[in-house]
Length: 524
Image 1 (cartoon, rainbow, N blue to C red):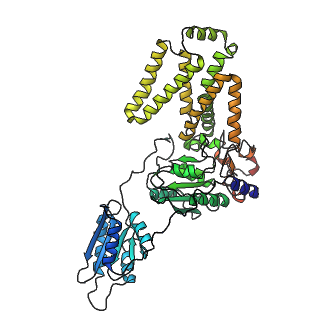
Image 2 (cartoon, helix red, strand yellow):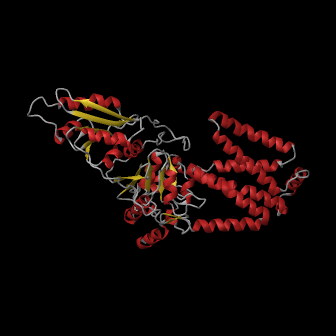
């Protein structure tokens, strides 16, 4: 099985984007012992960069001059004066026996913050732009990079896209170290690994690959790391850049990587053997590999009673069916298969459609386009105004269209139910894909009737069967069918019986995650 899994991953691995290395060193210039030369070089390098602050300080009771360089807004300025300068003043040589050396400066700076010696300007500049403070001492050919990063950021709060009734209220922020800390706080185990990478020639965005070394499959971890290292792009502004560049079928309408803003959900996937990618400047974490069913899971599915979870998941699947098929079914029944409608409803539909100028297909298509316009307008307007326009606009336009005899009242009901079905899908990316799916189904049904409807679904299923998420079939565990892994897909059994991790993401030798409560372990 392991060999087959490796073969699948090699087969679906995306090609190299570019042959150039991601981070090329510039001229490899060394830090000079002359403070003036270092100062002039940095000033020339950061010409017209008014946010770069240079502070020359002469140490009291000595002739030694130091240069402090930092980015305004990325470093704690109050700490620079209060701690760094004071520590150097204490170190100030008052006799011939005391001298400024790398060793005693480094020793003093360690009492303030984490400090690192750097001899090349490539590394020096990268540290500076990352928010660290640089210290140059006249007569020493080394720069001291001091970690005093501090900037304003959004506080930890509940994510608006994944709200729950029961469960933690914390969500990721745009600061990478806050996000890794939220995960570490929940998992106190040295097996939790976090590999740090930089992506982007210009942006040099910090990216962290997180996984459980004892649970996650080494093949998947290595493949994720290799794909990220192959990325050669100017900048990464959001985790969606990473998502599109490393997934197998970026042109597919279906997302093959799950994104979430919730630390508790990320930890749950880590404990199943998944790999998580965290990107600086975004609150969205990427989880992989995933299967289609996991896009219909909610963060609170494991916080509620399993019976309630089973029912709600059925409603989400029903919402998927309604959001994709209901407009097409309306067109099929009213245009091709009206004999399948009860006789009383047929007369009601015929009466309402008697003076309508459009065919059922054009009627449904126009109303769906209006709904998408309303949805997009609601998203772009401020919160309170957007909600008002979304609700009132839909009611006003629908009522006016019915009164003007442009659309059927029954179609308005079908369209409203379609919108509710799309809202029932918890993942926004999957909900967006479902919204788009109904248009090819609607066109096929309008042109070919029921035959076009079935043919389109066959094409969709064939496409889904050919999708993989880092070697894992997208329809697993339904195709290929694995009955042993059905305990947390459509339904969820009690947690005491969820004793094994999903085998598609965890190491085969470490798939057991809990010891049975009952004496008879075979009951599970």
